[in-house]
Amino acid sequence: MLTTRALRCLTDAVLSCVLALSAATLTAASGQAQTLRGTVRDSVSGLPIAGAVLLLLDSAGAVVDRNIANERGVYALELAASARRVRVQRIGFRLRELRLPERRGESNGSALTFDVVMVAIPTFLERVTVNDQGKCSKRADRAAAFALLEQARNGLLATVVAREANPAAMVRLTYERTMAGTSDRVDHMQVFADSTARSTSAFGAARTAVDFGRRGFADDGVTTQTFFAPDANVLLDQNFADAYCFQLANPDPSRSTQVGLAFVPADRRRGRIDINGVLWIDTVARALRDIEFRYVGVDAAVERFKPGGRISFREMDNGIVLIDRWNLRLIGDSASVTMPTRDPKTEHAFNVHESGGELAYAEWTDGHAWKASLGALRVHALTTEKQPATGTQLWLDDTPYGAIVDSAGYAVFSGLIPGPYSLVIVDPRLRPLNFDLPTPLTFIANRDSVVERPLDTFTTEEFLSRRCIADHRFEPSSPIVFGRVTGLDGQAVEDVIVTFAQQIGPGQSQPTGKSYKTGTDGLFFSCAAKIPMGGTLSTTASEGGWTGAVVQQAMTSMLTILPIRFKPKP
Image (cartoon, rainbow, N blue to C red; front, side, top):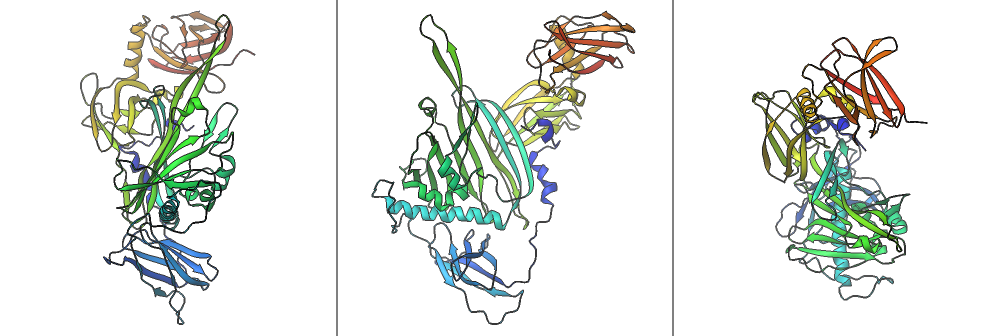
């Protein structure tokens, strides 16, 4: 797992991290082949149709080039010598396949103009002729469902072609959420950022449609299961269509302009986890909206907590269709055995975990850009003297969001995925301990809203002095020692006794201060080690009579940071 430190980029917005990347030139290589250009328009209104997919076909029907019309309905295809026809398709319109105009000795590098007119379909549920699927039950709505499937595949094809033909510089934010028990309330959230200079998709499936058909949507590990989700390529694949049965979904009152295409596996196999789902299409906007699905084949005790996921689509102003949000809801099981007198019983404590992400920002080489509707935090930070805490580094814990307090005492965090956050103070001196100073500031970010919060900041010395006073081990004139005990694997070690002594001669030391027992975080501190500046502090870490480390450190300041690597007993 990536650490927060690896992702930090001290700006007032995560989205600004993409600027250096988006400056890269992403122009396609120029070629000398003849180009087929034109505009796709609506047959009634004459308006340009953005997002129409154009496939250039040879005499055998193979695709030799493909592209997508931009926001002005304009397209361009490399006109190979073998090209004979062009197929034009767009969700909500009737497919057209046209013979190319005759080419009369045009030279290489020239353009052949070919405009296309498309006819909007009056309903997405026009009946079509379908081949019966032997493993699917016969239904009266089968023909209408396949008509809707054809339109859905037009939309999915636009998603695939658009990202190939016009990749974008992107910022993707992913998250891991731990819920409170089996509720929908988020207890803790981690956020990670990924910026790419050129990407074809925000989200991609880990398997092909063939693999999903053979192996299902989950893998069993030694102690865990890994779950997967489909993407546009998978849903577009004919192997997926052959493996599932389709029908019209029941209407959803909250989706008044949408119609749903439901799908269930045609061949359920014992021990294999599949998905049941619904693909929702907006018949007014003529656009894909989202896919909702549930995992089937999981344990019955787990299924009642509705494990599944959601993937949503967004059509940009330039006609590009992208997956902009994705989410998986997974269920964990912690089993414990109780031992009554006669009847041992295993109890299961279930917990809900969510894994997902969002496309936060996208920018294309033609200047088009898109920014997600996310939240923001504005902090007014003051010192203990009630002065602006200028220069203080602030961070949202377990996230890539960081900011520096300005001269007026303000710090702004923007581009926040909805969810709970807690703010910490960053002191570079504490990096060897991988520790930040916790503050009481917590909040929940919502879309398109700014949270305003005051913050009383403090230094590391002030933080530790308060801890020492609370622990009754504070000496005002004593240097402060703050450290962490970790094992050879870098993980915190609990229940280690840390003792302090002053080095008074070769091989001689004098105990000073109180000992400290580490907790689950491996941290220890002391404000009572009466060692003068220039003296040598000898720190011993032991566990159960075994000395795992002895560290000697010259006392050169009133704050000593002391990481200790603990060697376990053989």
